[in-house]
Image 1 (cartoon, one colour):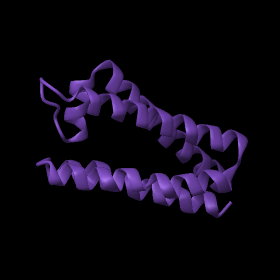
Image 2 (cartoon, rainbow, N blue to C red):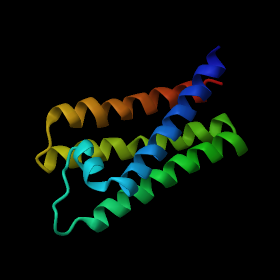
Image 3 (cartoon, rainbow, N blue to C red):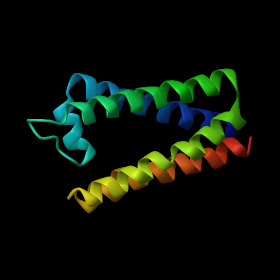
Length: 123
């Protein structure tokens, strides 16, 4: 049960961030609004593309580590990857986004990732 929870949460997080990245490819302006920092109509194409590539890469890398390197490597990855939503929290707050999005989405995501890292380390 414990192992299934640790791996299941890791897979869920990896798939979720991949889907978020794909959303930044398919509907970039809507995705940016959901991120908490809406894109302007005249010049945020690079930000949207970088966000898409970053998220898709992190999702695929996380799944790859789970499959080919095991729980310890995935745990280390999750530990480091938690820096991204922590940074996103700061970015949203500094860019005029709402505290609800910054803390309710980004900080909460960082906490869940850290919990999963702890679960994976415990295996």
